Image (cartoon, rainbow, N blue to C red; front, side, top):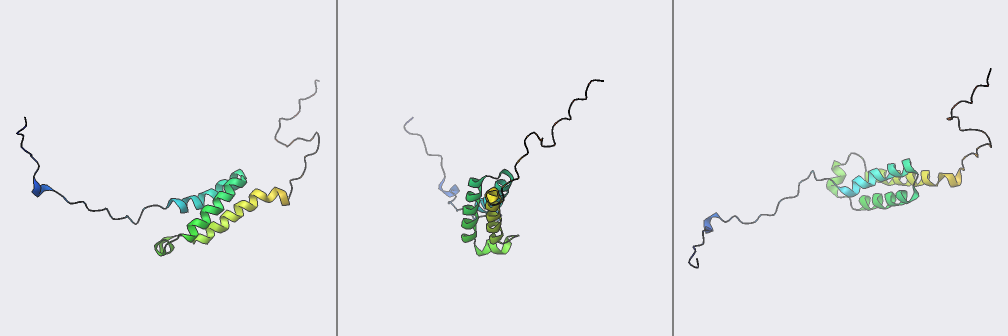
Length: 117
């Protein structure tokens, strides 16, 4: 057993070549910068709005010239959208909703029962 021969051949060795970066790789930060403002607007969550602002500014500042050429919309649009999500989140502070009248329904409840005849 000690006299086993090494079966590996030196002429079959393939040197390591680092893979090239694919141009179609998605950028997760810009994806988050474009989807988080919509989530903040739909849920009216202020915290998601602030996270959207941070992601949008970060992706705008880290934008490469390649991304500027291939992007369908400029990065400052996502910054504007994130500030709009904050505006929607804080809108009840500046434009308070109308108070509901006591005893009045919302209009979505079932109709009242008919009186017995």
